[in-house]
Image (cartoon, rainbow, N blue to C red; front, side, top):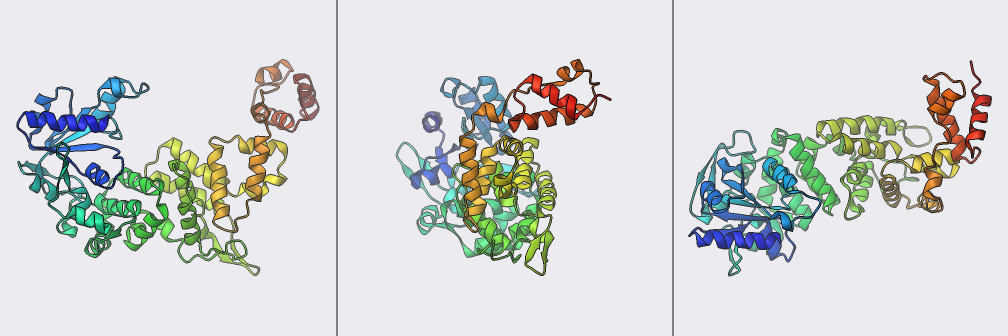
Length: 461
């Protein structure tokens, strides 16, 4: 549907005597026989002309020549209202899965903030527009009516050579928009391409300037690298390009931190982490991906050589604090940060599942999004000794438990305690927790037995 809308827009613009083509990533993906996630149109029409032709548009970046045309509401999933579409499009916060971006041919003048052009000059030629784009494989245009490809930058040759190459002078392209450095890494990893030597050298030289990019943008690019299917390659390239040192020095610090071979024959902490990234499932929840990346982040600062072996005393607690700082630095939402920290905090608990009391086990497995905890444990095992005993035990035991056994209705509540003569206060939490443990362990099975237990174990004062 989105492709049909894009072609329709091209046809309509041409009916008004404007040049118009599909452009950018959608052309690259179509040439690679991939399904594009979004479609962009480049045109000789100015933003004002585009908005006159298409009344239902949103000028989110008219000063840069960018106008958005939404997919008609009748074609959008029923759980997304027209109001939602308007809000997402107007804020440019949507994933572009319901809009077509129409950009006027232009050249960009000055990038004082290292991200956006200070001003643009509209042009009438696609050649000039292609020259200001990031990489050759993203700089091609396609006539969807004739299927003719307009390639002014050598994009098709680089697609065949599986190469990421900046258009024009790499240093100038990256100086204009520092985020392009991370995008080069992401594209190279996603497609399993090589970064052209001059392009890579420019990234290595300008890597410290990535700090000028907003932390949200950096976070989003890193999340895409982690979840697009080739996370290990992406982080190896981040390291080679010197960007890892700038954006996640805590991960770079894992390099060379040896581990006891009897538990980690795969090697140091960095290698172990890369093995986890290589095994991430597809599709992969972002929180699981970040949990895998950060689960051992506390090991480098807690490394010590004891008489018996290498140890990482307290690495979980230290890792949680470090992960919290990373989540804060990269402006993660509270919801995502909470789950990432929980994954780091609980990843070692699986070693004890076979010795846990019933109440402890049931509380453990009913953590929010427990499936991510279990998957992280599997990845951790598969990336070291491949001992899945605790993983299989947890899965089998959890499968044998009806939901009402794991999440039973409480036998007593605060009102019951008041009725039994207890005064409300901090003690209630301790009492109710003890009752819950007894219930989960099967020792308490009715309100009567629970109240009797409370009276015996917590006598009235």
